[in-house]
Length: 171
Image 1 (spheres, rainbow, N blue to C red):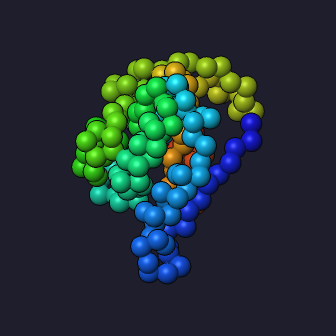
Image 2: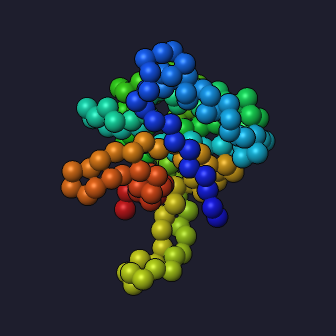
Image 3: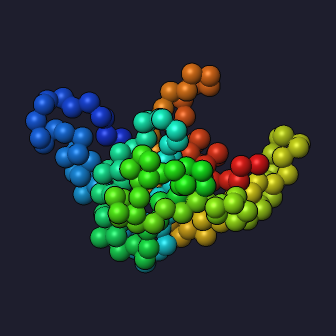
């Protein structure tokens, strides 16, 4: 299935209110047809909430305005999800129901045991199945809200990493 990737550059062209990242983000949200994706659906926003002393995450205000727009578009419910460890410490980086406007739910539950085992066909003969987090598996609509980050040892992490590593058990 072909998807559209939306990108808003972080650096403004001019130092004006209308060219700020917040204003550009609100304009982008206004252009999206979110109702076509989320209306009457249990909606999960998959994002990386960070950990430790890292600050390379999407700002909680940007997350909150996304959640508000999803609710206005008619989503039956909206939750933000990440791994159990990231959800457990999310408040340290400003992610809490009061700041983002919805609950935070671990992908595979608080103890990494809430998953659905799915068989896979892989050229790697040892990989026979993947354990997909129940939160992801049961979502009726999935918003992949990803930041791009350079990793010193392995290049770049983005949506593929957010989904491939962030939607399965720790195993």
